[in-house]
Amino acid sequence: MDEVLNTPYTVSPLTKLDIAPFVDASIVVVLASEDVARRYTDTPVWVDGGVHWITEDPSLEFHNWEFPVHAMRAAEAAYKMAGIQDPIKELHFAEIDARYSFKELQFIEALKLAPPIGEAHKLLLEGAFDRDGLFPVNPSGGALGEGVPLEVHGLARLVNAVLQLRGEAGRMQLDRAERAVVHSWRGVPTTTSVVAVLSR
Image (cartoon, rainbow, N blue to C red; front, side):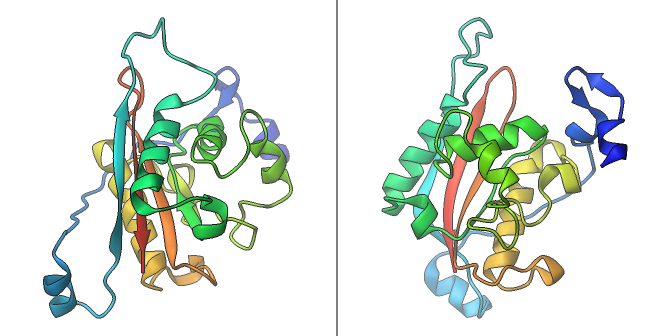
């Protein structure tokens, strides 16, 4: 705890530990029809009809810095397509963008995994988003644990969700992982969010 509290600021109020470092990665995702998927694997993961993306106004002057509207709208559309009424009850975990520590809390609220605005931190302190909590968020460690692989950051979140859903996440494996929400954020200035719902 002392190390965290005494880490110098990089850009106030964020310290080096609040900002995920850049890393190199190469990720390939294969999408296939149900027939083809079943021919090649016994553990397919399905896109539940819910994939949506939203790009906000690129003007920084009109951007809402307090709440990620782009993520909320993308989630609402993805949930509607997937038939999700109550994400906390119908999903089991989330892999979301956390390239900055505070963004994870904002995205938790935008994805309706906590009441907005400013409630996610209370649930975080109670352990609700831990691997054994009410609704695990980033059981992989997220970007703060793995780093940001630049343009494939969203696919990194997707791959970690797929590993969970297939029961292949090793020591990070959750007890219950049958349906997930995956989120990625492009960052400023386009502030684009992509949200997908996956199932085993």
